[in-house]
Length: 97
Image (tube, rainbow, N blue to C red):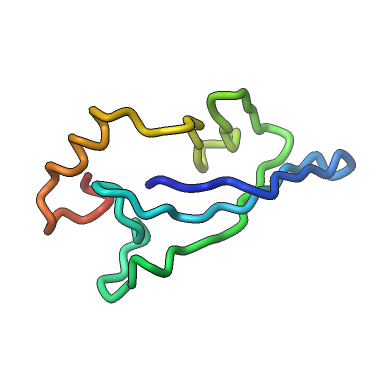
C-alpha cells in the first residue's frame, strides 16, 4: 500500500503520537488493500493512526512498537518495485501481492 502521512502530532503527557494516513493510487499499488470489490479508486481511504510509549521512529520508518504496523518512508518508490507490482495479475488480491 502506498500512502501519504500528514498532520503528525504528539501529546507528551499521554506519550502518544498520531498522524493522518491517506491511500495514494499508483500503478501496481491500487487503493483498496482493505479489499472492497466495488471501491472506486478515485476515492481513496484515509484514517488516523497512533502509537504510544513503545513506538520507535527515524527518518526511514515509524514502528508502532507492539507489532501492529510499520511505515517505511521514501520520497518515491524505486522503479524496480513499481515494475514488479505492475506485473501482478489483475485478479490477484492486494494482500496477495
